[in-house]
Image (cartoon, rainbow, N blue to C red; front, side, top):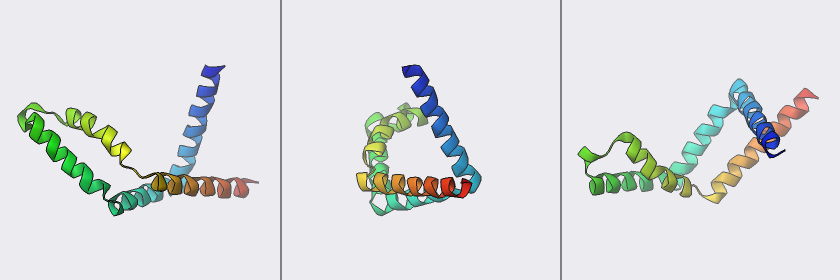
Length: 103
């Protein structure tokens, strides 16, 4: 039953993502997210963290994959809850509008 639910969740996410792509809203949401992350200083914080990691590990001893692995957890942690909530609410509103158009 757990696997079935996971499959249904994955299918639902896929369907939502497809609808976002088809309507062009996915790009709009990505741009909104980029703007919000810049506004809250996340870009500058990650840039400083990258420089620190490169300095500590030495440029010649680090690959892009290593750097991504190092900064990804911090990058995710730096996204403010308010930004996540706003984006989620906008997606919900979009989905509700799409559902009403299909009725």
